[in-house]
Image 1 (spheres, chains in turn purple, orange):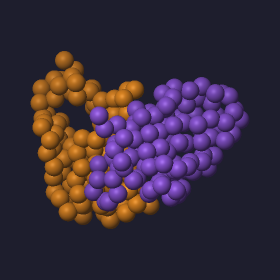
Image 2 (image 1 turned 180 degrees about the vertical axis):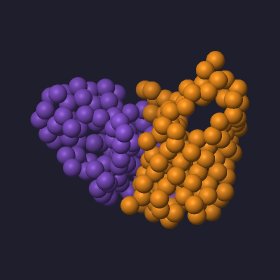
Image 3 (image 1 turned 135 degrees about the horizontal axis):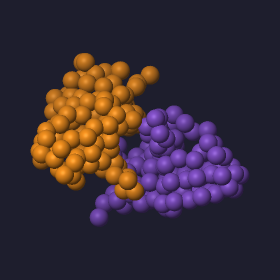
Image 4 (image 1 turned 180 degrees about the horizontal axis):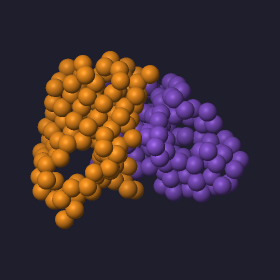
Length: 113
Length: 111
């Protein structure tokens, strides 16, 4: 089954404790990205990757890092989480090109206290 | 800067009714527009993708239209069912595959 898998689904952590949210896709997609969803603000792009070893900032990259060492994986790293990073996070993947359907993971609900 | 707006923010209809969800965007220089469905705990599911050169797309009871020049899209749901209850999101895409989302319409279909 074609899917994007995120882990964990739920996470409560404390301020400053480094964490990683994993994302893996099994569709051999070149393009992957991370979004956060906040009430009243919708989904906003954090980082994206056009292919292995190629990453770039989205609209809200502050406080986040990513890496793309393999085509299937695109982890999101919070080096020092803060309460304003409490949000619902989604990983997405698609084929390259301007008319390709995006596939989303099930989301990771992160709470930073 | 591209902005996407969805109206209404919430909608409640009785089962069987036909309904229309609206999406508008400020910059007509888009490559495509996608409609997604979001269910609690289940992420986003792509419903329809309309390329910028197309006027509409259909899938089952769903029909999406696109008027790029006026910056508008509509999602028409025929004969609504309780299982259609979800949040519906529209998103436009530019050259970098980045999706710019509206804040969604929360639909409740009452049995």
